[in-house]
Image (cartoon, rainbow, N blue to C red; front, side, top):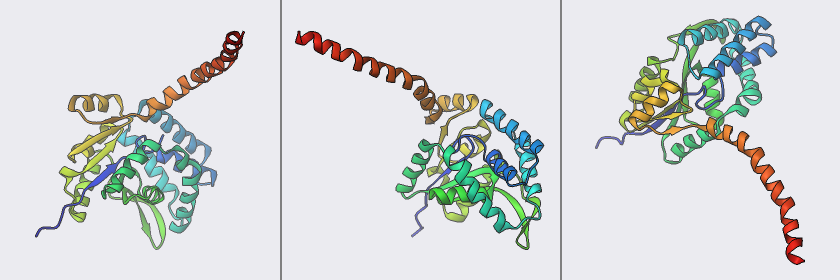
Length: 258
């Protein structure tokens, strides 16, 4: 009897699970610990701002910052960087996670489905995020190590675009997933190869191009940005209406008594 095929859900990270860029938060934390100069961190800030305003990823741009990060950690002890990454997660990453995305992932776990992060960000950081959230595992861009230290170079290709699809296809073979029964989530049209590699693609906080594709093909659309905007806009209005009601009600009450 053939073994039962397992199912999994694959999540992009930046702007899908996390508000903003993993590389930016990593760079910010490294700067505060003396790994980067002010000029370097200003570039990270600019890249993150452009990313957040457009919702788009640029493979060449991501690789530039990825190379910068791996270059600056070159020669540093792997354990030292792991400790620093734990601190960066607590300070910057954890407060910026989309709770709605986490709830979707947790629903998959409750259904006995594995949850994997798939990101262009450093795989070590992706593994940390996955562990902290209780997910199954993570796939990311790999920094080369030798004798317990980072060399400053990458191993293999940047996990972006088609590389994400290639990675989950290999993972499916290793872990006996049937990709036709699996799920994937992303915010970016650059991740169409990842989305199309599974039978159940979904979007979270999609960019304009991906939203059009999702509408055309009937893919689920989860947009947690809209909820935050509505809360910011409607929250003060609701508070004022409630306050006005509290002021008006006693007057009505006194008038009725008379």
